[in-house]
Image (cartoon, rainbow, N blue to C red; front, top):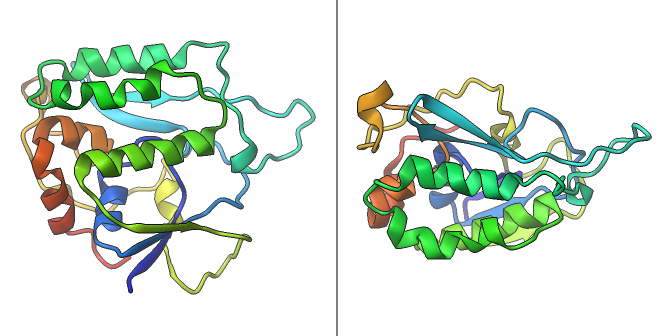
Length: 208
């Protein structure tokens, strides 16, 4: 059984979802400390001017003590959910499949949510349902620096330069800025619809 270890992320990248689609089991890392500049609280979509960052503001400890990611709360005094949803509507309203998935995704932006990791795990469940992706999942019980399974936790690093080559597909705003590789899975879903799962299963993600 091919098992991989990953961090839950906010609307994962195409690369991460391809690794998941080509695995039989995902173990979620839930015992890590929160770090900035990662896909834990950010995702990139295609917008009229190019890549647009969707970033979830989080509440930091005032005493400077590091938080575990599972304990991190989102800063809901700022209407980030509304901003993200409006950005997605603006970017993808004319894409082939936005309206097809809109009603299933809207609650993720309209219903109150508090904990970052819990929200990311809910997002993953919704995405699997929409994509038709079936994969066994479990959670870590302690943090291991050298796990016995395939460790892909590095994929959470937003500053990492990925060697994954995204196979081009038609993007709704491609005429504005050319093809944008390895965006959030939402970009692939809104543009490719039911073909998303096949695309992920055939992606050349390499061995890592």
